[in-house]
Image 1 (cartoon, one colour):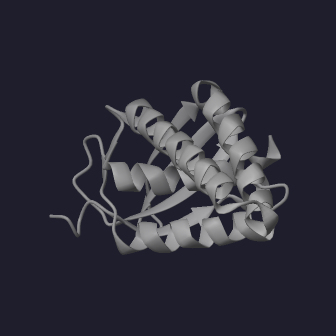
Image 2 (spheres, rainbow, N blue to C red; image 1 turned 180 degrees about the horizontal axis):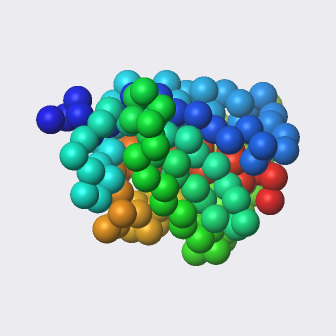
Length: 157
């Protein structure tokens, strides 16, 4: 059953991304790797996958284009980004400070920024999981990895 309700492949709509720093690219790669290693993804009413997910942003909406492994369309979910905008903005601000601090700040400052970054990431993940409720059931770790990818896609806006 766990093998059926999972994401087996993920594609980011590259047209949604404007710029990437080395750090952002590394976060994207880790999130995709971790997501594909272990995830729980159950679209409402679906008989099962595994799924290929095309994740993008269109007209201020997060787009989950769900396909079967053979690329057959299986459903499309669109979520407004407005409820997520504040936490994404705050997350980027703290991440930028964190990556700058790594170079020359004292360990206590780096640790404080990392805790703030993780806290905002958890907040965004919980909010994303709640916004998906009734549409796609995901566990918290899957929501965390999807939130990371959402942030990568949100760089354009």
